[in-house]
Length: 344
Image (cartoon, rainbow, N blue to C red; front, side):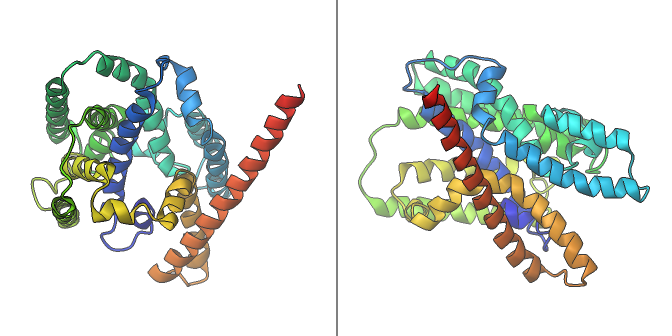
């Protein structure tokens, strides 16, 4: 969905905003399920964050440098300056670009890297969140937390309405407050964590699969309606102050819940081998695809071949190809590292 949204075709940008919402809630959900039954509590601090992102960080640097080549070209033709490029590189290396509420900083170089920055902050907070959840003895309390988090989502949209600018390139834009700001995205992550707790302590469900088919169909219809609301800017949920966050959160929670239960047709379809393979490479492809699309758009534009079908097919092929090559390189490196460790 995020890949399609970055192709710049029609109103398909809605898929990106929805996809990010799914990514963040799902991340919190899986983190809780992954660490809940481990004896050792993860420690709060930069070390834990490094442990969580260390596989993606080298690729982040590589894609950043590829994107920086465009900026070097702009410097050579007088449209850019070295100090700004060096500042952007330093912000990306330290994963701090998203904390500056200005599109001139958080959407530079490999623009999608803002997500890695938001995840790093959520992972930093995760040990505290997990510790709080472990002390809870009632699902009702977690449900109350979940409702409170949804209320906070609403308050963020209200804040964006009063202090945010509708101009996406402005300082403190409504989009930064509701979509890019790590504090706002932490709310989505916490919602996923609460959902993970509720899933662990869920009650035994009935065996009638037809009811799950019906629930999944209803959720899918609601997701499509939310896409339509976003694309057509139907107020109030389609406004700049709501559409990047609160619009998708309810359907995202429902979708993840029913897929996790795994009794309906969608969860069955998503479990096939091809889609599981796509899922396994998606974290790498996420960082690669934006740079691939940027290069292709420039090359095809100069060749007067820039059209939706061409850029879609070529971007998909090159993104998958580059992802597979990177994963092969990483695999070889890991094997050599393991061999050296055994030798020592």
